[in-house]
Amino acid sequence: MNSASALLRPCTWVYVILIALTFTTYAVGELGLGGLSFALLVLGIALVKGHLVGDFFMGLHGLRGPWRWVILIWLTLIGGLIGLAFTRTS
Image (tube, rainbow, N blue to C red; front, side, top):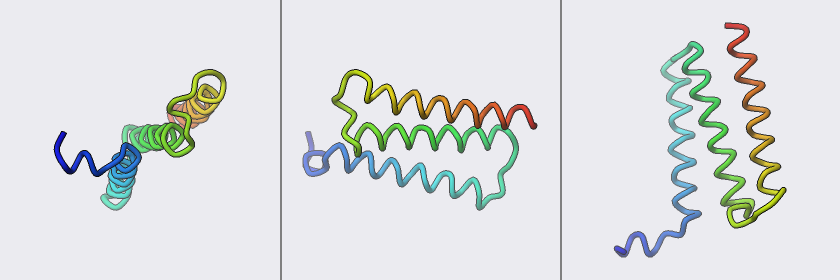
């Protein structure tokens, strides 16, 4: 393990990933990229970010049982309904 990896905890890496994903969605908006594929891409990024926040910053990473599943089911349900709304109207 090198010295940079030893200094950064997993939550720090997750924070960096969250920032990178945020800049990605910002770039999609600023470049004016549209259409169903980009809308679903941004929705997927939002779901991944929600999962990362739940796992690492809400402390659900090491849990078993209903609490971890509640967040995952909620994200999947809401993401699925939004994705369904996008695909039905396009």
